[in-house]
Length: 553
Ligand code: ATP
Ligand code: MG
Image 1 (cartoon, rainbow, N blue to C red):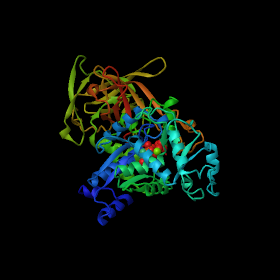
Image 2 (tube, rainbow, N blue to C red):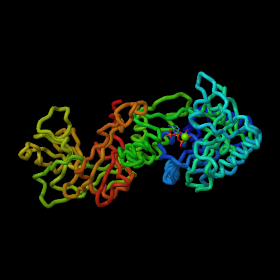
Image 3 (cartoon, rainbow, N blue to C red):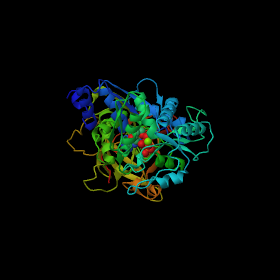
Image 4 (tube, helix red, strand yellow):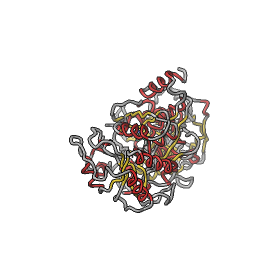
């Protein structure tokens, strides 16, 4: 398959193909316009892959523009994290980062133009009255008593707003459109409001701020955006988008196209709700590995390629839908199965002594980094008389289905010898403390000479050489499929979403594991060293994803 064949097709790309074929456009310019009021999540990744992906495939470019018209909720921390996440996903924006606030002067001038044309007025109804006058889906709104002020009066009052002459909520600028429109967004929408808040880009220069609907279309036009792609909830707002651009003196008129948002089962995509999880300390920050944020997925061990592949597979349509968590997990599992180095880790260790192995002997065995990729080489694996195996891999008695170690029977130690369990030692409570075995010295890398069949293989680490680690196992963060629909979504948090294993023992090569570099812990799953908590003195590993789909939706 050629690269071109692998390109996604969707209705937005079809529109672009038509626009290029008809000569309506000779290039493609998109933008990704996050509001810096939280960290990016997997839903944003869908929008990023769409906007930046289109720019890449059509040799166009994509702007990164912060939609920063609400200084009260926005922070520099978010501005920085968003840039980092976009780049980590593998995309680069066109030129400098842009901000809607870069255009505050121009936006103000366009507002004045609307006033001069008799298309905007300063309203002094209270916010509650404005809501009342707006009407409902079934009843028309009614005109504000301030709607018919003269142009001169409106210009003076708008200037007074700008000079700080009104309190918040005392006055606002509204577009004069149609209080009876069947589209509520067209019922004289507010386009400027008073807000005495310091802005992270413009400081205290302004005490009036433009509203999203007024700002977005003008910013798109100023940047020469050809296709302004957003999610379906802005479908009605498209009327206002077009109305503003049709009524101001600006040459460019981008077209807005809407697609359906990504919803993910057992997850939430609302930044407001994600923020609540953080502020209520129900998770360990925006990048908690259970969060559906880009930084959380990254810390969990997801790769940019797996997230991009997920976005490719879910596609872009106008249908509302909810994607199963297993769809996301398959993408990372397939990536890591292909690319993650293999290693051994014993999560719940029990001691195993090989009594016929010489007391002071140690061997350096060799273990392939990837079973199907010899080109990835091997690493050293120390072996000695005392090893550790997982307590789940031993039983005193078991039927044939249990292909691990059983008293009196043999099992292969992965990449090492065949051992036979001879007896066990227990503590006062009856817990097994040591399993005593013998080994067959002729079975390193080969079957027993006499034709004995040894079916089971278990993983292990050398007790003397192993390094201790904390292992964090994750389950879904919510216990219901659609937590966003619950009255109190916080009450649907899964109390068992994190299991801490303190005493895990890892093969020594893992001491050098880089944060975020995922490994397959053989027979256990895919894990990576935590990018915040892990250090060479105290290793902390996160479960990225299980080896098989264990999801029970
Ligand atoms: P939230 O509801 O999480 O606050 P938002 O739409 O307010 O999301 P923005 O920062 O405005 O967040 O989003 C930037 C871009 O990402 C927008 O174009 C928006 O449509 C898109 N986007 C946000 N959430 C999703 C999602 N779940 N699926 C696809 N695109 C999304
Ligand atoms: Mg938004």
